[in-house]
Amino acid sequence: MKTVRKVIYVLAVVGGFSATNLFGQFDYVENSPVSSGANDAASDTFASGGQLSDDELATQFGPAAASSGATAKTGEQGAAGSQQAGAEVGGGTFQFGGQKAELYTVKIPYSRKLSERATLELSVPFTYSIYDKALFGLKSAKAYGGGINAGYAWQAFLKKDNVPYRWKITPSTGLYYRDSSDFREGAWVFNAGLSSSFAWQFAPGWVVNVGNSISFAWNNGIKNYPDPVRDNQQTLKNGIQLYRMLDRWTLYVYFVETAALNDAFVDSYETYGVGAGYKLTKTRSVKATVLTEEGNGRYQSVRATIGTNWQF
Image 1 (cartoon, rainbow, N blue to C red):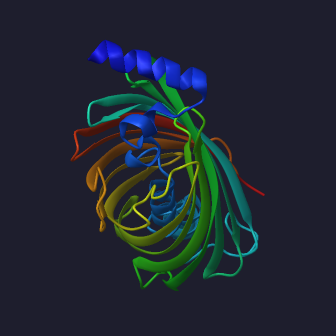
Image 2 (tube, one colour):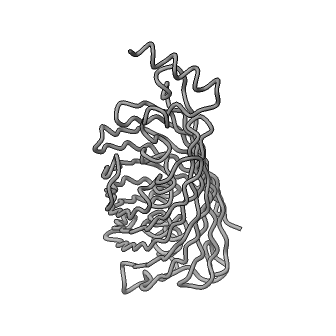
């Protein structure tokens, strides 16, 4: 029977038909947490407002803020009106439901400080996935995607001399695209989200941050792919990060729990990460992160990223 199915698959490919649709195989393009438009949207929602940015670490919790006695003054690093841009590349492997795959990512973040309290946050992510022998054990399949997310971070409380913490809320929105010629499936995903971040400096050089986010994703499936995120998906993320600042070094560890509110093949997973950043100059820095993930649906992932950030 397996041989017959493979012969039919070859004939289907030659004839221009989608074998995944013929046999009802998994919709891989959106079922994996790290290779889906809905997950990109949820991750960007959390990153734009649920974590501490490099600018916040330097201006509100770093040595420059401590020596000034409050937040940084105009003209110092991260001052009002400053801009930051960066680039991040990553790669790794993941598996779910017995399917193994590789994932490669590129992310371009940008932020512009509009005032002492308000910051515009932008992120442009790209993903490329290779699913090992996903087409009935004969051929690997590829999927790719991209998007853009915009957030408005508002700091309700600023960290100052007499206030060792800060709290910000960030509404955001994004548009994402996912496609696969091999699977003949794809989707446009629109997202709206809200995130919150509470950071507390409990000792010199030590900062703990608690972040939360919720995102709402809607899709418009293409190429016979009617419901890549089950028509719509809501995703919750809750996490905690610990930062240790040592001169030019910043070390951090974090834990994030993710849960999908609607049915999904992988509807919950945990992320564990460890990383380090190094300040090359007052305006340029590099950082690297290693993370692992585990979830239901036999989902596992191991990935690493390296990036750079600069102010201008």
